[in-house]
Image 1 (cartoon, rainbow, N blue to C red):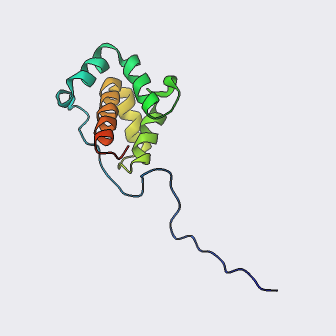
Image 2: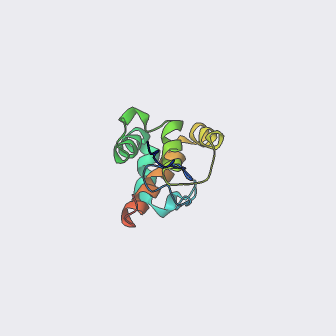
Length: 113
């Protein structure tokens, strides 16, 4: 009998464009780079959370979660940690939502979303 050659996995496969690393396109408090997103985040964060979740094909109720920020960050190779995501989400949820939405808009414009 002949044995099939063994396959050695050098890198783990990923889902989406996370092969490269990147960074956030705007800072956490860069609200004035997109006033429409900022106003939505300040006056209706629930609406913005649903938009973010919808953009990511997730449940609307998940838009404000630490898990959503972590999912987005890891999907696009943005450096950070679960602890960072927890602190940002719990200390300034509107800023977190705005940052994710701005990033989504930039990635859509660059055709990398």
